[in-house]
Image 1 (cartoon, rainbow, N blue to C red):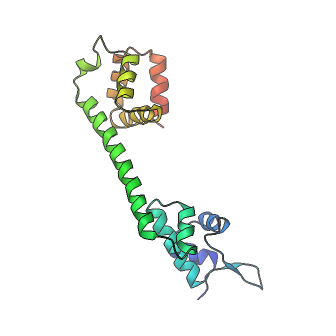
Image 2 (cartoon, one colour; image 1 turned 90 degrees about the vertical axis):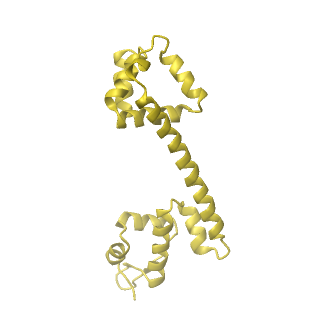
Image 3 (cartoon, rainbow, N blue to C red; image 1 turned 30 degrees about the vertical axis):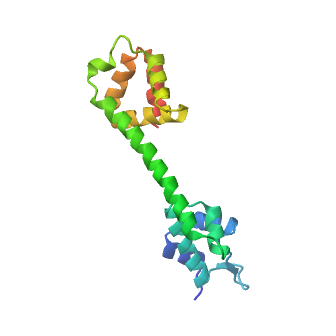
Length: 174
């Protein structure tokens, strides 16, 4: 059986643009109908597209998927174990962020407004605990998303000027 582009996108649940991108990257190579030059897809294309969607749902990049589909001696088990390890590292990092946020949320308001705590001291503490610039940004985003009022109060407690607080809250709410 052969499928037209709109048929295969419905069967797989992909957008037309995604399918065309997969073609462009060489993941799928459809046949051309000689009479009208339309793309037509085979059962094998359908099977490969299902594999692509499955592996993408696991976070595997397109180059690795291409290797899985077109190279016979790709060690799929090893690739999946590596992907699982990447996911475990991401989960670990997210748990650390989550715990930091929870600790801050649980702190009483007086702790936020301690006279010995200011912006530079707080940044030093966070950096010493392992947060880089990206981590600091994610910390602000998470704080703003989970507890916007507490985030604002916290920033005010660090004696940060209102204009700077406004900027921090703007980019962290995106």
